Length: 180
Image 1 (cartoon, rainbow, N blue to C red):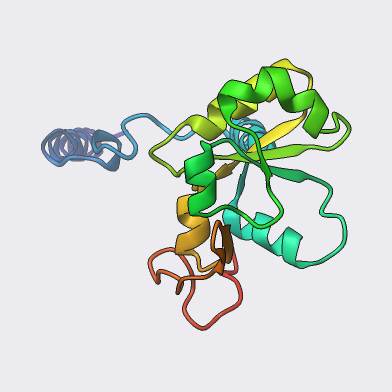
Image 2: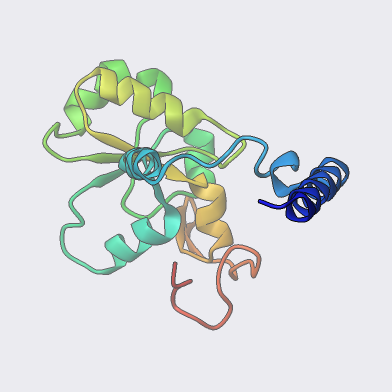
């Protein structure tokens, strides 16, 4: 390497180093500060997450298809909450009563999908934990009854069936499904 090309390379390296030191990189921001997992780790994590959770749209589609959906839906809220509105066909079993009543109401061979109020409530998670501890296969319905109602699905109430318009922030307007 000649002296001129060495000097040019050194100058270029200094300029590049100076530019990198002064300009923030994407890795300095909150999104990439912790780098994404490897694809293999991501497959394991997201696969496991889907083994533990389902969403209201998928539950509604499975129930609407007719026939045996292959699971039972369990509402873990109080009787007053149940009367206010619940997923049609759901089993009512408040979390506090699971240990004493689950075996009379549920078949261990049938997976259970639990739910409670919504994303701000972990009652569905507590119910799933209690059922898993008794030997049931469980998933939690993300969004709970709140998102069931917000997505425009029918509920059963103490007064009969009820359906509200879908919230355009949670469900597609004018389409049967979101496509995700």
